[in-house]
Every structure is written in C-alpha cells, then in structure tokens.
Length: 262
Ligand code: 0L1
Ligand code: MG
Image (cartoon, rainbow, N blue to C red; front, side, top):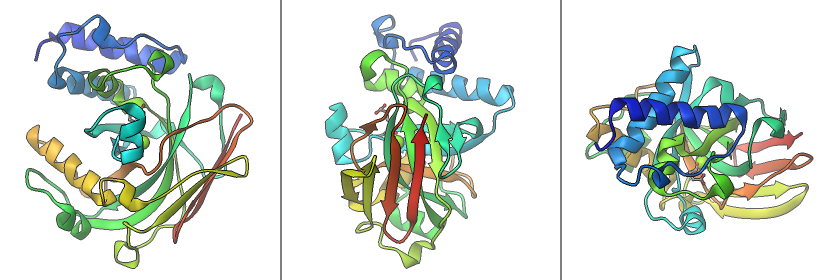
C-alpha cells in the first residue's frame, strides 16, 4: 500500500460526494500517481463501509470489464470487481431519474444468486455451477464519477467500478435449464436494436467472472457467502442513455428487463 488511512478515507469521501451530488471529478491517480491496486480496493472498501454505516445494505457483488466488447471499449484486459447497494436498485419497468446521475450508460448482465459459499484460490466454473442457486437477468446502469468516462483501472476500482443503478428481472431459472454460453441477449434503445451478444462474450462463460471474483476475494482472505447476488458483467459494450430513452433488454429464456430514463 502506498496511501495512508487518512488519504484513503478522504478519497472515498471525495468519490462518494461526486456520486451523491452527480458531479464529475478528475481521475484520482492524477493527484496520487503512486496509488497501487491495494489502495484502489481499500478506497472501494471504505466507500462500502461509509454506505453500510449509513444503513445501506450491500445488495450484491459485481464483476466489470468482463466482456471482450467492454475490454475493447475501455482499452483494458483485466476485469474489475465492485458491489451494489440496496438504494441503487430500481424496479423492472420503472423509471430512472437522470438528474441523479452524471452520464449514465446501460449494460445487459447475466446474474446469479449463490446457494453455497465460494472461496478462492482455485475456484473454477465447475465450482461456481455447483454453488449457483439460480440465474436472473439484469441491466446495470453504470455512471463513472470521472469526467468524460476518462479513467485508469485503479481510479475506476476506487470509484466502485462505476456502480450506480441496477434493475433485476423477475424471471429466475435453474442453471441446469440454461446454456449460459449460448444464451442470447438483445439490447433495444427506443425500439431499435443497438447491441446483441451471447453469454460467451463474458470471458467464454459468464460464471468464469464469478470464479475470478472468488479468487480475487480469496487473495484478500474473503469469500463469496451463500445467498449472494452477483452481476457477471455486461455482455455487450455499454450504451449511453439520456432522459426520454426507453431501454428493453431481451434475454433468451430469461425474459425482458426494461426501464425508462426520465
Ligand atoms: O460494470 C462495468 O463493466 C463497469 C466497469 C467500470 C468501467 C466503466 O465505467 O465502464
Ligand atoms: Mg457492469
């Protein structure tokens, strides 16, 4: 670690103020170029601690930058991990207020809920399949707090991987009833198809992202508890949205998840 606890706390406060006031900021590595990966996750942990201390429950975990399309879009080659809080959840078919956000984008995500703990190192897709209770579809609304979505990986990890809002669909399916690699996803904006992909776009199999998350947490002496909701990452590139836009994402065998931005 390169940063002291006081700086970590100050950076978490700075990033959370940007989130809650919907005001963009410059990437934090501009002022702290010596920051390392542990510092980045320590700032994210402090963000989570702040939210939980105010009574917000952590609703799930997320993997980001897991698809080849997103990695290309962002010019990176490793996933990142974060969390979502209960206040970020919006109902399927509901409205999302853009005045609370800076520059939202939507991502279609295949998600799971676990029924057994997962602990790395050595976690693999087979272990994740065995520990999966059910699969649900979701749309994540990401909203980097960094001006013009300009960041590096350490800055984006500290910013809780741009987590902002999420909408979970209501159709759950058993994992053995689905082939998550070939599961098709079509993303429509205002009735036009703007992106499509299959589950294999996420690291060859979406549950690979969960195994990587378990291995990442294992390095830090943590595990994924049973009953955890996990978003495996956008299958397509992220699509920018603005007030007035309607988004519908059609997931093969898992129904449609929709929302309107107001
Ligand atoms: O969920 C995601 O894939 C977001 C990762 C962070 C980078 C971004 O804001 O696109
Ligand atoms: Mg995402």
